[in-house]
Image (tube, rainbow, N blue to C red; front, side, top):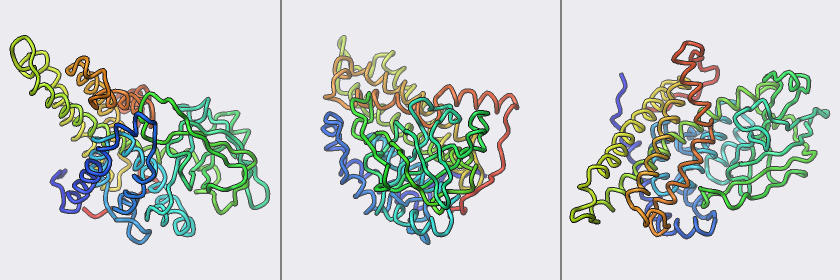
Length: 400
């Protein structure tokens, strides 16, 4: 039976994330967004609070939280700004949870423990200039050379690229399989900043998430020890899909927080303004937009909590996670658009946060599987073309 009564630990995580975001970040987020400035102090503070190891077991340096705790934290962080949630999505969802599931004991000691403690930040390198949703379109290669691999390629639109210490990168190790688009030719590797041939750069002038760091990773004959290969040779695609499933969950929870932020901003404005001789909140068409935000928030929250509950049971929850991500991200963009509409000319100005919400909302419909990818996934599940697969690799079941 599904029970969404939050445990004391889950409530404490929710309160911790809420107070951090609102007291430590909200007063400065408008300025940081205007200046396209990623404040490194934010990640450091999140580390001090234990948020960067939220779902990693204590034995590996983490806080031992579950998926519901992670979802609640992401919702509270994105309520203030998407850039905060992105840190958890990438560092925990895409990388740390993947290392926990697939890493060797030595890899966990060397990389996962400092990540869980917040001593090191991690980034996820899959997307390339010519390959986004089409994972098999990546061109990065890894050539075997004795007990090492030589990596070459370019990754782009990588969150935390210019500030991360560790990088989970994917490349073709079998050129024949690359030509056939056989996913068993892709392999995953753990790279470190400072490896000769690895350089990063920052992407400026983005539409949204301007207070977050996004960039590119260039690989030029980067020599990577065999010990840094994550999983077996040829398992990279499966590892990437596992990682993306966790990332999608965090995006869904974060988008839910964005819907709530739009609802609160629009409602607060409508209750204090008047037009045509009565409160803006009394106009029927304004009520219609507020109602859509309210119902969307409730539905999005239930969807991500359902996905989190399934994950806590050790299930892959691919269908539930995809549905939560698709619905929440679509609803977040609609809520942000309606919030701008309710505020009118003020919504078009950064004097109020809704224009930032509007810009931030669009990105989530593209990354972690575009809305089109998720619509195809949901249709295939509904038509019986796709089945939920057994959890080939599962996390240790979190405490309820």
